[in-house]
Length: 196
Image 1 (tube, rainbow, N blue to C red):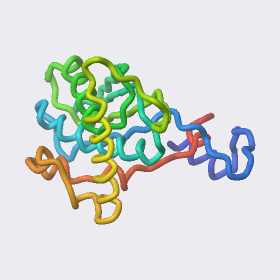
Image 2: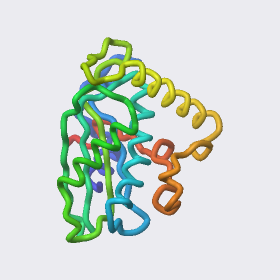
Image 3: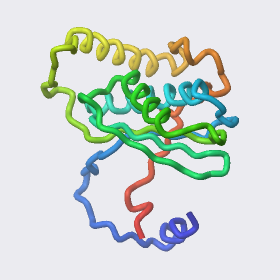
Image 4: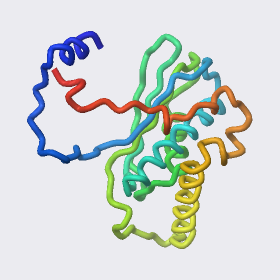
């Protein structure tokens, strides 16, 4: 971090000059958080994963994206990090599907030999939501569209009345783990911020 601050303080930036009003292409959307206490079981991780997935899904829907890949990251209490990712069967912006994929990845990767300190989830491989989506024989397309409308309605309620106006019952069990708002608290750094 000292190197980055030095570069900013001295006006050093190797990024090419971009036209006024241009925006970088978004390649992934994610959130991570250090837990207020050690995470000691799957239930603790599930709470954190659901809060983070809601934030990631909401930010994707605002951009009009669906993702095809979910990645998770976690660190144990000795600060050893692990990252896993998987391709989804179909594109989605559904927070439940994102959290479920994250938990499947986690359960296949961690044996609880140590408690965890932080968890993160991100999505990539985007397509625009206005495009067609592939149905299969066992997929209920109408149910999927209802879920999308429900998620967007919840997003608008949270935007209007605050993040706590509507919550999943599963998050009410441990307010210490679920009582943060990664949607409003996330910090975005410019690309040049981390390049030498």
